[in-house]
Image 1 (spheres, rainbow, N blue to C red):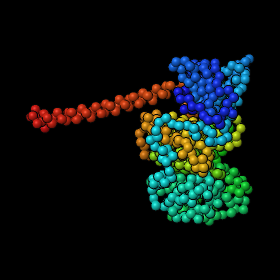
Image 2: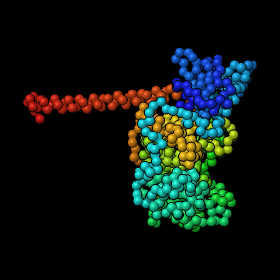
Image 3: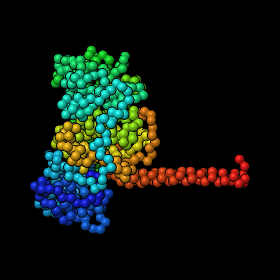
Image 4: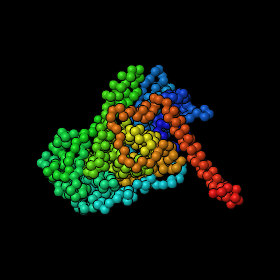
Length: 563
């Protein structure tokens, strides 16, 4: 989608973009891309796209969303300007433009259009699909419909957060213990970072244990307590049961947070819970890790040892290992020890969501279906307040321009990919679906990943003014592209290995612009062809058996054969 070669009808937008576009069109521009012959053509800038058209018959065009551009570098050789455009989806292209003034104008326009501060000027508010919607993706995974899948009588839907008055980053409807009333929840919310009181993330139907998530408690330096919070947390446990609190900070970080008003659950006040610290890198460290990873991927070196050294120095695979290890620990507590788990770090917006989501993929076969995975993303990430607008504002090439960016969601997708590699027949969706989610989180024509939380989305009326990604994906002709042809439903809990030799670089994502992936595509096509032939042969076999049965019956009636 973003940065790929496609043909689309040109659209020009209203006057609000005129001030940004100094030179709307330049002729004789040369485009350089990996694995493509260079193309010379006309470069056009619209409000949302950079378009290069060759005018030659059967020559494809480049359509690139401005919002997909991460950084731009300028270089001049004589009167020819060379623009290197680095994209959020890791693609790097070069444009050769004759004339210094034209080149500087194009670069200036791209920089402004790729950093629009007003969200309502972004492409999702202008995009109009050319086909009718079969389903409204905004209504596909509402909390009410998802709660209908929860078994057991100990839980209820609460509208305590109506109009986002208790927690601005939670949805208006949440699932909480039935034994706790809304007044108690409001008191507990005041004792949690950002008002993120403990809510149900997952109920494991085989044994009734649950996964909860929240922000950190706020005992502060004086060790304050909140009996309502204690009641809410303990209500998730059965009689005589014990649970685990998985804190995604180191013990020292958790202790130090008390001086800033934060803290952790003490055993004296939460005696039924055992606290375990599993420190995971914060988003700022992940941003640095991704930057180093892509520097390694883009290095031209013939030495495997040096390249592996650069890869190891990025710590990206170490982060993958730590997140997967923690998710497996949570799943083990739930499934093998029949113990409920509460997961939180500081805010509960990043690593917490990685862990609760991955644990569900391990435990719940429904989350390994395409529809179930969409529901998981919507429930655990979009509705639960992961700040996509802040975290995905920039990618790996922009440097440290923004302090709130970090590839938290990308790391989660990488962890899912690692699990898929180990259980290739247990997932209904393929890695192209993961790449689609990655690309749309950073730059999209859809409104699904816009803004930082449901409150902001509602204020901007995104469900009315933009189309959901799920509306597009769930059309049958689109959906089939993302179906894993090897899928066989697996109702078991799956236990991925986190040994170093079991984890790999996701080369089809991080190296996809530097390697030819046509062999992967042809393999998938061949598998689908074999499956289609197998299906047709089975149908033919059924028909032949039916014909044989009819002939045998007719022969019996005529006495030609005996029973």
